[in-house]
Structures are given as structure tokens and as C-alpha cells.
Length: 75
Image (cartoon, rainbow, N blue to C red; front, side):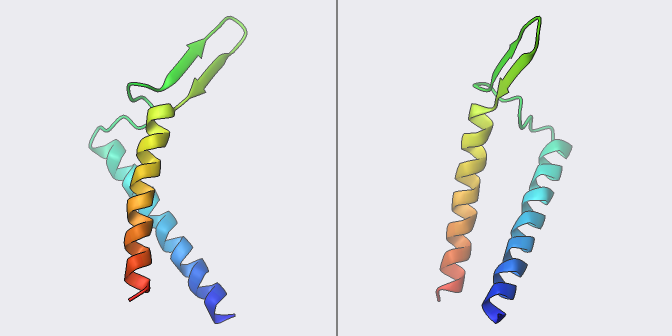
């Protein structure tokens, strides 16, 4: 039971840091969701939006952060 609580606390910290990063990105004017390479098509009956570049950027950042956390806990 102790390991589950540790993982839940770690997940909460990670979500808090992600939220803080997104908040700071909007404060500094980084256009997450409106980067070059994001696909947006507007039509008469609807619209389609797929943030390709934003997804890749968030994926790389999360990979680096999780690798650093993994190395910290494996020592």
C-alpha cells in the first residue's frame, strides 16, 4: 500500500509541474496549441484541429522530465 501512495503523490507532483509549466508558457507568450505545424481546417459544417507540433514538443519535454525523475529514484 505504501508504494501505491508514493506513485499517487509522484503523479500529483508531475501534474502540478505540468500545469505550472503551461501557466508560465501562456504568461511568457509561448503559443502552445498554435505552433507552426499544427493542423487546423475550418469548413462550413465544422472544424478539425490536430496539434502535431505541440504534441511532439510536450512529448519530448515529458520524456526528459520523466527520465530525470527515474534516474533520481533509482539511485
